[in-house]
Length: 307
Image 1 (cartoon, one colour):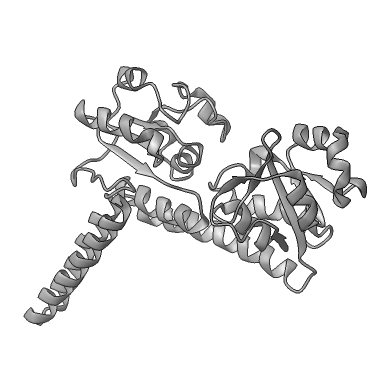
Image 2: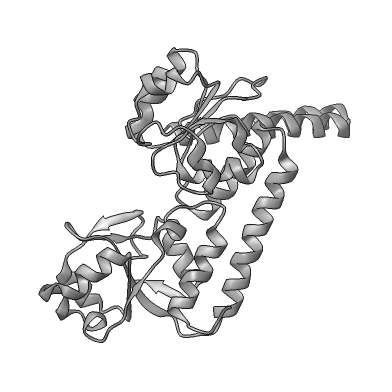
């Protein structure tokens, strides 16, 4: 609901700004209105909250591994004063104090490092933390980054907030070029029906709402649960067997447990040795290494297609 209202408000603002510019017959006025709209949009987050227009953050807490990677890619890693315990890339991020997890974070620990901006993952579990931080006078930016398009949007927002839109464009262009190179390399090859096992018990599959399904598609595969709009979903072994994937993608430990479990021997891909181990550190987040992640999957699904 918050996201929908935010979108409608932005659309109305764009229409009014453009109308005023045309009525005055002043192209520069229209351009200025568009620029103001772009800035306002960049500073409105996925909870519908808005950052102060004059904010230039110097002490940032990033509680999302994807945005932590982005701050370093945008040359602002030295502004970070807090991260989650899961933010392990780039290596320089390890020097930033870890403040716990990114979901339902410790607000007191965050306030203790005196941030002037906190970046959160826009999940309902983090709404209370955002509210409490704002009540304490700390601006928050909550971004939901589950899809490749949302990654591009996050880069644009952070680039505007950091006053470095040029670097933001470079980051997005670099990722997009690599993604297109992988897509071109796998175009026309047979699309392997793929089951991505994200968890063992309960069995959790990656669904169509995740960037991981997009990466599988770019890498020349087809997620057997890609028709489900959720990022992930509980499934049964029986249903996976019924869908009969050509290959299984899983992390190292999960793949080993799957191969050893008698119940999974009912799956043809397991019996025939087509459980492929993914680099979970590389592919596990929609960050600046999306292109590398797609390439790594293409090497698994289509050996020799890409170097």
